[in-house]
Length: 340
Ligand SMILES: NC(=O)c1ccc[n+]([C@@H]2O[C@H](COP(=O)([O-])OP(=O)(O)OC[C@H]3O[C@@H](n4cnc5c(N)ncnc54)[C@H](OP(=O)(O)O)[C@@H]3O)[C@@H](O)[C@H]2O)c1
Image 1 (cartoon, helix red, strand yellow):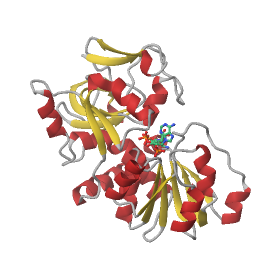
Image 2 (cartoon, protein in one colour):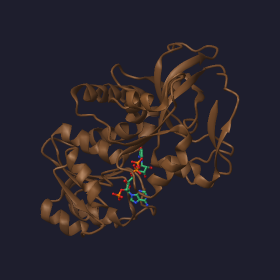
Image 3 (cartoon, rainbow, N blue to C red):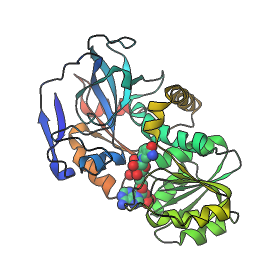
């Protein structure tokens, strides 16, 4: 097998593509032949030793991946060799094979193609848990999405439109704004060229009912100052770098809430609710509103290119890394995988 290893965990320059013995599943584990692994912003932080947890090098990065179960460890029940599964963990996805705890895998719902399965849990799981569960977004309300052309941002646009909300997508370029309009945003703001607060005042004089914030930094306070009465500001992440601080008089004055969102913990602590959420996402795919925005599909061996694109804010939607199924020719396999 091949795998990427962080050694040392200093970011892209510490990545090595190495050959290693295929791992055998221990008790309670399954072995997975990985078909596709998506790149999520936390991967960049894990690779650079800057995330909430810091695996000891050498380790294989990659938190989200999908593939086929190839072997079962002792005592595993409820999963069979050949099952299509998807999983989110701390490490392991940027490789051709991985061993993970059997209870961490979820069966890929029927009809979901591999590239969609590779982005379903983190991007759509987070956006759905944030908007519908934590944010209580309702039809007719106005949603502001910051960093709207990113992975969780594009998922948030699709989920909000399916809910019947009005979506204002805020991004850093005209190309990103055009993409957001193409996937359903009602209005866009380019915060690299326009003042966010002034633009929001013009588009939503009452303010946004819900703010989806995966960026942080200075955008957070600017957005929060424009929130509607009883608004909900969803704290998703800090792709912009610094973790912002808000004066507490602001939520008081607007009767507004600052709402934390942590999909991974939700999935662990509330497995039944998380399972229902995934069923809802599969229905969204069936109904046609859930269609992942895939910036590009790259061979697994090109992970550094993908990381560089994400770090430069150059990705529009998701980047997915794939392994060729045994015996297939590369480009044909990619085309099949991307039929979503
Ligand atoms: N809370 C949770 O459960 C949860 C789950 C998944 C992800 N997250 C967090 O959500 C955030 C977004 O994740 P993602 O996978 O969607 O990332 P992504 O695809 O890279 O999108 C992030 C967006 O943030 C904006 N951005 C602003 N400053 C940036 C910078 N210095 N570097 C990179 N991007 C910057 C970019 O949009 P513009 O160029 O338009 O500004 C970019 O499109 C991350 O902070 C991640 O940790 C949280």
